[in-house]
Length: 263
Image (cartoon, rainbow, N blue to C red; front, side, top):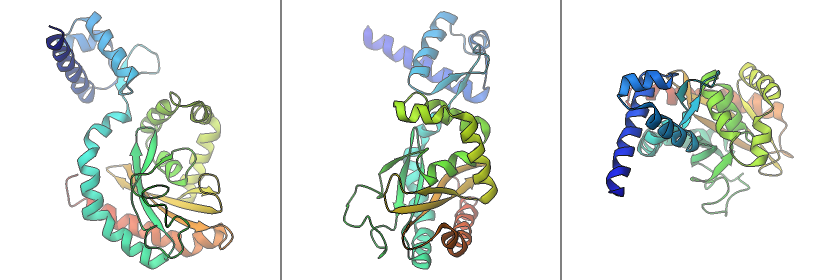
């Protein structure tokens, strides 16, 4: 009986997700009319979906909408496919052109995850020898402490950005504190959009800096390209002057190819 009840709850939860995907920001009464699910049951389902990060309440607290985490449900295969088939060859060429290590990362709930990188082959990488760890494919990095994460947020729509920040405010204290500084963050996002790239100097990987540009798909960032450099070897002005246009060109080429396929 327990298994049967759990299965029924799962089915109802999926119906709720599907309905919210079709008509966002709705009340429990509207959901009940749309789905035929009683309101007491809906409250239980919505509370569970909120706890797991897939649903959030609207501005007034009486409506419900999906969060950006829902997109992760479909990312497992497509991310791997489009990175392998489209982005990796362009990333390899970019790495050859700039020599400094470059990488591509995308959102994974409360972090950016490295999808591909040239750290293994770049002669200028400080991360060679770390194997599958720091800076390599599969490695997760904080959103607010990286140029890649900040660029991703800055070029996202406000709704998407707010959803990501809501997730971050429910994580560890350090991230929660950083994500709560709304005015400071919005000011930085404006600067990133104006100059065209996200920035990190030191911090996560000492002695290095990075700049990151977005890869846009259907009006939202799908991922970011990132370039690492050694702080003692180059100034930010030199990095931007020498490599920003090349990185943006590579991002545009990925965007162009993405338009030709269904990801």
